[in-house]
Image 1 (cartoon, helix red, strand yellow):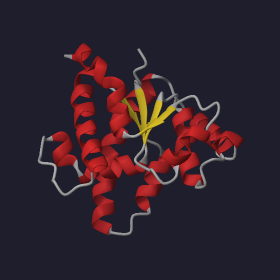
Image 2 (image 1 turned 90 degrees about the vertical axis):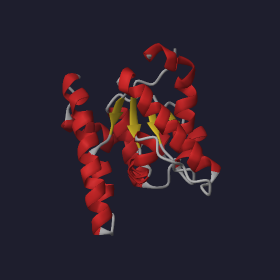
Image 3 (image 1 turned 135 degrees about the vertical axis):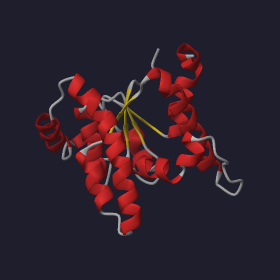
Image 4 (image 1 turned 120 degrees about the vertical axis):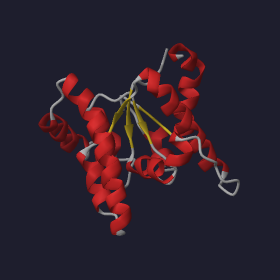
Length: 182
């Protein structure tokens, strides 16, 4: 089985889960006016998190995620994102400590990977840094909704030890096995 157990959430997915939390976590309505990709990602995350209650996915975020959240200009939104980040961080740190991961080692590896040639396909250094942290944390996958840069260039990556996919693609990878966690 090729089921990703540890998945790094891009900052845009952290934002998305905050924005659509009622639909994702509480089964709320998904508006009809949304583009199909948005609705598919909401439904996928709903199924991922529902299955994850039994499967215990390891959801990773990094200090770079926090830095990006801090750049949010609207103070109310930034505060909401900080609270949500805090919940995700607390959840991630349980696995982080259990696996004896090191912040210094992860930061050091991330700094070495950011300028590496195999990440050069990504024009933004912040994207390279998030992906570098995902590698440093031993993630199986990187979940993003960034279709303009990350998803557009993922086919150019050679030697990256993780998969990059959208929430809908993540769900497609695990859906055939979801019954294992009933």
